Length: 191
Image 1 (cartoon, rainbow, N blue to C red):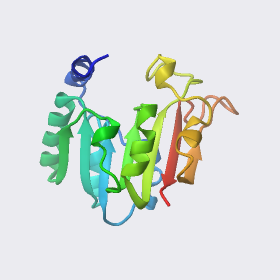
Image 2: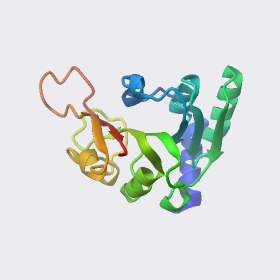
Image 3: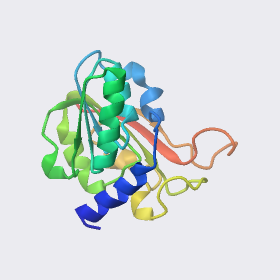
């Protein structure tokens, strides 16, 4: 799918969306966030993670391909009195600046070709918070195409150069009615 078709797809999705939630990986591990610094919510959608980061006092940037999502995020941030920079951005390895961010957050977005650029965009000691869908998911949320779903323990492999801080992938173990079953959660630190 080309850039314009991808943007049109996501603009259509966000046209009728009114809210999003902070990713579990960020909310459950907020105590790991630095007191100050530069954060990026990459593929931010409606920007719940960006709002959360800005509320925590981080200088926050939010990028997404959807102009509709970015405009909604800007209005939400303005209404809350938050200072954050939200930009429509086609995300590829060429536009991720090196050694820039103290925190990068991604949720429900998977492009394996960006992993090295994402790690490269982190400053030394920077943290990556990543959460997305797995192939063995039980629910119907998220993509159906396996190209956009993680294999078992794949985040560990994709971001192996980072120091592992947190990893959770409950998979199909134990009481399947409890816990997050459809997603993997990862926090890694650049050394």
